[in-house]
Image (cartoon, rainbow, N blue to C red; front, side, top):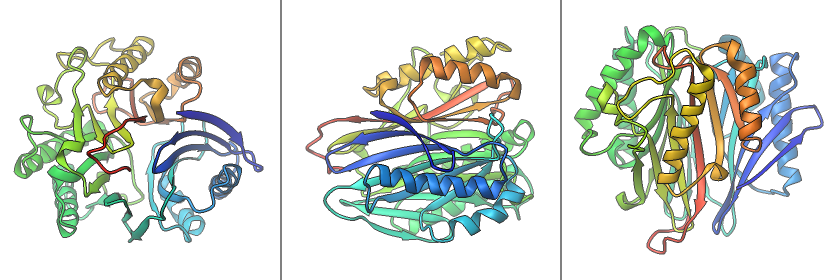
Length: 384
């Protein structure tokens, strides 16, 4: 993985990773605009920073696939976003998870530059699909069901709609969904309903502890719709073979998630001919029996969290040197200075966002998710 940082002409900091592959190069950008400016100025700075990055790398026709905006005030920022993004076709995720360092907006941008042929893209208001080399990479964002009464009912409706969306494309939740992000408003009160509905829906779809679940992060987050107690983003792949998908357990350090009543994989890998993608789910300070470790101690919880992630990466044949992006979620704003210093000491190159977003069990002070990529040679599979 290649890491770097640039500062745009308007003062936004772009921390980036580059994975160079046979079929395509992939880029993850974490963009921090100038603090103390208005939301519309920060949005403009982010857009300008992306353009300047593309010029600096001489990327003429890259495919911008996914935007995630971390917002301090989603109700107001949602009104500004369409003005800034009206010419973009890729999927955009906007979630209230306040940036820990005081910005109004931070951005995570994922893009790819394909070497031999230009991919086909299709989009609607919610889903963006990149089709290349026989694969359909399907990113879906902002799925909500505010018309339903509670978090259980809303979650059931969201998964039902998503399963129908996949079915219309000849896909299934069990066979093709790789990753979900589930955002729960007031997580201490609404997480239980989400979990109960997801467990029941997965059981119905054939996703069990004896088959597989899906890599996921379930975390505090709000959308611009006040009645939405649950929202979901998801990533699925069409054209993928079952043999290309594997799941990470980390059983020396982590328990199976079903031990404490939830249904997600610790991590998922997807193998292509030229690379392996690794999706590490939201991970916290937990032991192999499902117990919270070091309750109340941010220092030791952070250390255990990253130990758990290291174990999962190693199981996938990777290390922190292969991590392309990272999101750190903090329950308590007061822990910001510690976590920033920790990241600068241990992972100075990795593009990272630190957001204030309480974890699903109040004893956890920090949760971390990441993506990674490693070069492999799998002649039995098509390249990315």
